[in-house]
Length: 227
Ligand code: ADP
Ligand code: ADP
Image (cartoon, rainbow, N blue to C red; front, side, top):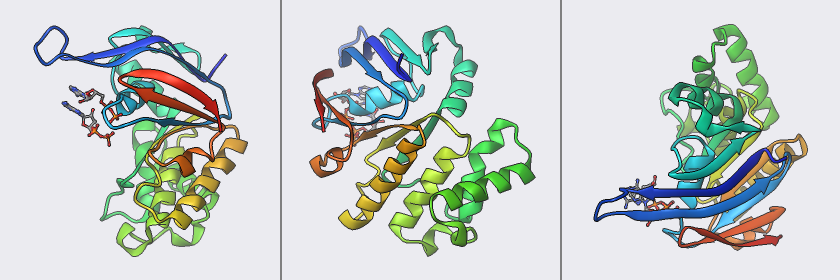
């Protein structure tokens, strides 16, 4: 079975009101361990909504989502938060690093919620930075690093709890194409280490690096192609 599996997943915002929006409708997808997939589609087609559901940041209005085999609907809010920490790393276009913290502290931060002692946390953060090629930048703050370096710090942070799934929303959107290629090469390496990587992109050249491309339109998955 897939690490990510959905059946008839749906999301309606403001249900029953005048402002009702069907943002996602009947989405069936299965993504296996170690796959690298892209989600494409025009603005408003439901990509963020789908990512929020896959990331257990929001709950569906219909259908089922199994995250690494666990039916997310069977969990309460606390269970979902726990699942999110254990299973999912998030990477964003804007890096979302804390400006007053250095690279090491930024990477160590999410483990604060995961009951890991400070010493152990910093050790793991250091290892995660080494894994993304930034072992020599631990004490640099975000403002002292290039965009590509900041994104690698953000990826190290996403990996700190060793989640099987990485969700990335336009991770190369703020980078020049050469730096973007380096970030994609890093995702491919993580894929080889058995991480499942799902990225949203508008850029066909970025999607081309993935194994499969899902295309969305008006809340539906309309197409699935092999890249
Ligand atoms: P993008 O197209 O870059 O994914 P959007 O502008 O669609 O970004 O959405 C940005 C954020 O705003 C998302 O978290 C989304 O859930 C939220 N959002 C989008 N449209 C609406 C809306 N009509 N009402 C409230 N929130 C919205
Ligand atoms: P995309 O990421 O592809 O741009 P979104 O998932 O952000 O698409 O949005 C899908 C649809 O849902 C859009 O019509 C958007 O306006 C609407 N939407 C997204 N988030 C919200 C929200 N929090 N409340 C109401 N409508 C929303």
